[in-house]
Length: 331
Image (tube, rainbow, N blue to C red; front, side, top):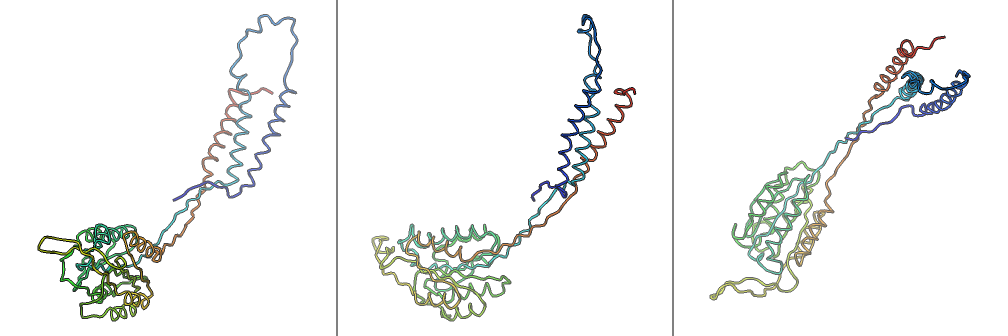
């Protein structure tokens, strides 16, 4: 809420200029009405005490000027303006479908693809304060770790709990997308979005990725697909009789399918080859999916002349009392 002062009739404040000639006229009149007396000597007079009335003889006039100024302010109608801002937000429902297959352990991202994807997704979630967000994980099958919620702390905690081995290994892109779409099916939000992040090729599941995309399209759900992995090969931990060793494995991402899913649903396809690139992908999605915010301003006016009217009345009353009693002037 913002408050400021203004006048309904500001031009009346120019009447204040009249104070200058009134004061000048008063000073001029005082010279004409002052009495003079000739004396042969000032001895015995110079040390005579002055009465307080001498110093305050101009007080009635000063009170009149003050009262006049207050009356001018009252006529100008001072008003306080209170402006209230009503903010209405129209949030977006976002489901993030995250690949948790074993290939997400590849270390072309630091420390690996999965941990990098979790960290950057958490940053994205933390900045979407007006949206509902949920999380689906998939590998050989899929399940919902967190349904749509505005409790972003819960979403973040669920991301932190994501790890490999939660479900059977594999890459069921179609099933993962279908699960995310199912969570958005009954949403009343104007804008519904799925962010699908994977590093492989669909090799499991009973639902084809394109079929899941067609379902998303029919429900007006946009799908942003993200292919994660460096170009060429990536170091991947492999279990051997001598322990875990790193081995360069070919990076295979079904980009054609991911592009087709995004194109069918009105989304975009992104390729992230490192952590920095993945962060930029989420930043681009954040810019593309802006929350609608409407600000309505309500202005309320309140008359504020009461104080000035009271001061004018007090000044005039004090003037009348002083002139009738202590500062009374004999004719």
